[in-house]
Every structure is written in structure tokens, then in C-alpha cells.
Image 1 (cartoon, rainbow, N blue to C red):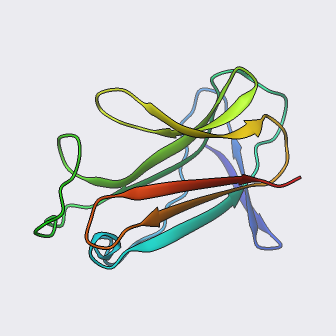
Image 2 (cartoon, rainbow, N blue to C red):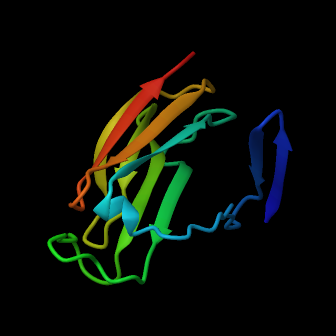
Length: 138
């Protein structure tokens, strides 16, 4: 619940307190990220005052397609090709990997602020390896 507005090519998502929300987009052949590689780039910014342990941006991509031969997924259960989110901790914005066995911190965007950030996820062809790149722009 909340609201989603599009203005000048930018989505503004307003979330109601204690409510879940999502913005979805269909993907035709997600498994090609594993076979051919690829990248997802997302620019985002968080608004308002710092709240510790606040969830920011989350990117999740599930597939029920068979995993190609030679590609080993880590973890258990059905493969999520993407399960990443940002979270504030100790005044910083962190990139996290959502995992069944416990979330893993992959890196930091730096000190919390309302500036634009860029998240880029790069998939290596023929493997389940994903490299997260983060940048901070004022």
C-alpha cells in the first residue's frame, strides 16, 4: 500500500508504515542471465531522515525454469537469480544479499544521504556468479 508516481522518467514510491509494497515488471527469459550473462542497472535514492536498519531498494528475480547444465546455484530451494536489497546500518547504506542461511553484506554505498545511488548487478555467462557494483553520486 502507498503510492507510485512517475515523473520525468523517475518512479517515486511512497510506502505506508507497516505495509508491504512492490513494483513488478515481467521478464520473458530470466535464465539467459545465467547462459549469456548480462547486467541490471538501477539508480535510486532514499528520502527522509536516517532510520537505522531501514530497508531501501530490493531487487528479486525468481525463476522456475531449469538451471542450465554446468551452472551451480548456491543455497537451497528454488533459484532466485536476484535477491538483493539495501539497508541502513550505523549511518551507512549497505548492499545486502538475502539468503536463507542469513543475509550477507556485499558492500556499502557510503554514508546515508538523500543523494542518487547507482546499483549495477553483472552476471557472468555460464555461471551463477553475480558481481555487485555500487556508486554514490551527490
